[in-house]
Amino acid sequence: MTQALIVIDVQNDFCPGGALAVDEGNQIVPGINALMEEFATVILTQDWHPAGHSSFASSHPGMAPFEMTEMPYGPQVLWPDHCVQGTMGAAFHPDLNTNRADMIVRKGFRRSIDSYSAFFENDHRTPTGLHGYLQERGISELTMVGLATDFCVNFSAVDAARLGYDVLVREGLCKAIDLDGSLEAAMNGMKDAGVRIA
Image (tube, rainbow, N blue to C red; front, side, top):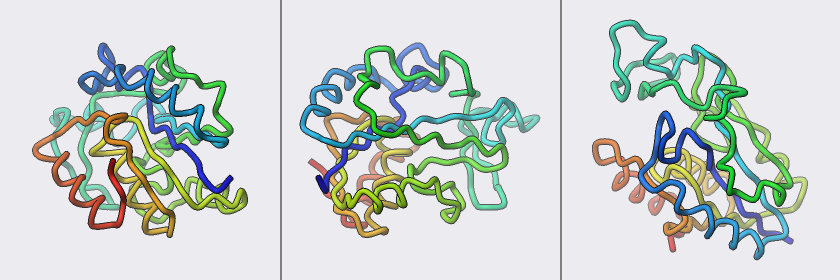
């Protein structure tokens, strides 16, 4: 009972046809559902932005999606509006088995700060509460899958490793955005942090 499966952001806006679609993002859903059967504990994360979130390019006049800007907490990619609270885009992919979730961690709901990691906002200090939950449950081994490999999966895995968890990323059950070499950088960063990739 020390193991948990963390399913990162398998939401409509990150799947084909969505506002920030990851190529073939929907194709990992059947494999994730099958993997859930191997775990007693399953946790889902969900991007949950208020309208007008500071990470949206539309909140920065003259800026375009995928351009970089500086926030008080550091560099920030500006994204298309996505995963806005209560919209179909923010909903989990309809084929994902959400009934297996013990917990759903919503992130990115603070208007002034983005949140890639399941553990911390992008200031790397403000906690989501997931670490406390896992500690209370006595969980020390995490397997991570979902979207996108090079952003939310990467940040979650690296934070988990730094917090002392044994972390495995199932590469075949993740898909990447790969923005200007972000996938290679993420894979190297995860390995350097001690994350296992299989």
